[in-house]
Length: 161
Image (tube, one colour):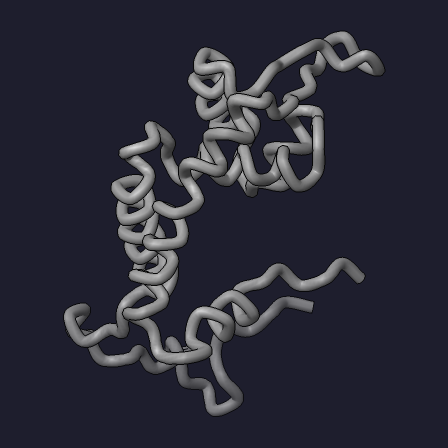
């Protein structure tokens, strides 16, 4: 049966009403963009605080993960640090050159590598901790009490069902 292109009254169909043109300057800010800017500012602040010990905050986080969890395959380390594999590699290379981590073939999978924290890496964590704590205090001092915990909780990934 052919489909009629007119309404029951015989009038041609009408397009749905369109919203009036909007002024983009009145749109609310993009939450993702605002969070990205905040993350970049926080990273820059931590990087500046850790500069005296020659670490970036991402590298410091990697060292702390290895201190907490022990030797890890690089893929697992990347997951723990919320980094993609290539970014993890770019961060591990200078840490290995400085002798802060050791990278060795994974005995269970010769194609993979395992990262291990060295004694020098442990010393780097100890040297960096006061600088990191100062950055934490500065950032925390700019936030209302409980604001950081609320933000972290709101943005935490949902548990897998």
